[in-house]
Amino acid sequence: MSETKRVALVGCGGMGRQHLEVLRGLDGFEAIGVCDVLEENLQRAAGEYGVAACYTDFDEMYSALKPDLVTVATQTRGHCAPSVAALNREISVLCEKPIAIDLAEADEMVEAAAASGAKLAINQQNHLNSGIVRGRQMVEDGVIGHLVLVRGRNKCGRKSGNEFTEMGTHVTDMMLCFGGVPEWCSGTVYEGGRPVELGDIMEAKEMSPRDRDSGLVAGSVAMGHYGFANGVLGEIHFLGYQSRDNHNYGVDVLGSEGQLAIRAAGDLQQGLWHLPRPMEGRPSDYGDWQAVSLGEDVKESPIASMYRSLAGAAEDGTDPPGSGVEGRWAFEMVLGLYQSHREGGRRIDLPMCERRHPLEVWRADH
Ligand SMILES: NC(=O)c1ccc[n+]([C@@H]2O[C@H](COP(=O)([O-])OP(=O)(O)OC[C@H]3O[C@@H](n4cnc5c(N)ncnc54)[C@H](O)[C@@H]3O)[C@@H](O)[C@H]2O)c1
Image 1: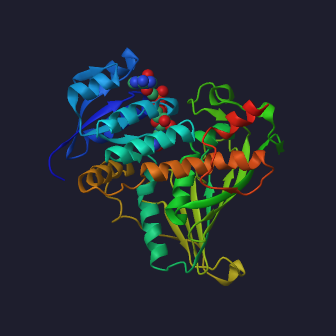
Image 2: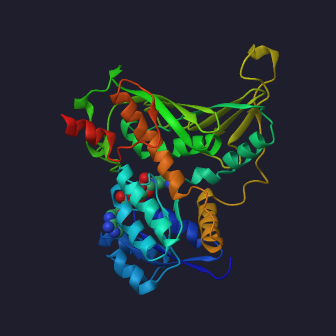
């Protein structure tokens, strides 16, 4: 990369400060400005990370600083406006997940990037997690034979409906790292053991007042299926884990000759296991899970890799990993399950024609 990339940050809460921490340790990048509507958060971030230029209006910050990159770390409802404003000025954007509050906003963001030529990436950083990157390579090398199924499992510690929208795109993004473009989905969402009904729809903040605002949610458990364009099938489990045990969080990748288990929480050095056993057959006929050493693969944190790859893509005009288009697919895989549920678990073609939130449409129709 040529010169130091000058980065401006919008949203100085918990995740915004984490971005500043990453940028502080990242050669070739410098945080040059911060913006927040809350003076307290703005001053705290600026003070902790020694950033002198402070703004309460992102447009003013873009005009004054003309940054090379913008990071958007507001909550989901605040992703679209600062991202589109930056992209319209031909500034590339690393925006937090999930991409937006509904598909109409996600479309606006993807279209703004396409129109300006600037790059949009969504910080589903597991895209560049060393376990995922190495696992993809192993699949490509034929280590697990013919790829059949990718199974996604949720993190925990949140009510599952909220978890589904707030964290779900991390899981669907990891799934599409192996499946590619999703073509259809079907699924059912449950509350207290029964299928979700109209009256179960609520704002994420109603479900979990102390959690983030990720828009409309419903239900405590969800299960779904996907078909990907490359013929691979997907299965997702959101089982409403209430404990803080995140050991399930990740994907299982099942092939004709073996399986991979990739876990995204915890130690970056150990997030990948290989089971040299076909999907079918008696478990006792084959060996057990083997940890795959990732020592050489772990060079930096996945968020640092997101910055590097976005800056590289902006320079050479390619699509960054975790692009806006992929981020929108990951989000559509979540919203598609709500639509399928409403239609009795029917198979829904992706992309969906209706770009409003499926739960908003369900409410409006009544
Ligand atoms: N990728 C990850 O692993 C990861 C982890 C945690 C959070 N996140 C995501 O990061 C985002 C932020 O989460 P958080 O926990 O930091 O939220 P937060 O509420 O702590 O921080 C958001 C900040 O944005 C500010 N803000 C709101 N509107 C603004 C505007 N118009 N202009 C400038 N600032 C504005 C708020 O005042 C607040 O300080 C969410 O989308 C969340 O899902 C991602």
